[in-house]
Length: 111
Image 1 (cartoon, rainbow, N blue to C red):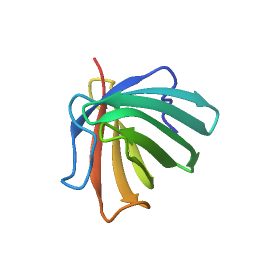
Image 2 (image 1 turned 45 degrees about the vertical axis):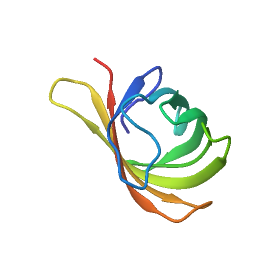
Image 3 (image 1 turned 60 degrees about the vertical axis):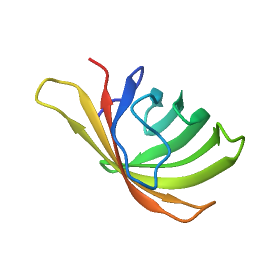
Image 4 (image 1 turned 90 degrees about the horizontal axis):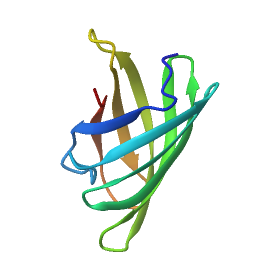
């Protein structure tokens, strides 16, 4: 399990069905296996994710208010990696529950 506590991450790659962008920043808190984050930027006015590590896989649910005032949500299964330079990366496999679509986003720790 790779520690995410206190990290700020940016979206380095997003799927066409995703809403996050390079302007989105995620701020993580971790307590044991439990992981929480707040995020905003780009089309996301405010978002939250809540999840936990199951083995080495991070699973979470997310909800976000978008700049259109719509609120959307879904769930994700993520691979968490440590890069050669020591930064962390999350590869998120997401599925919307409030609209059609699924895809992959990549989050990288800010240097």
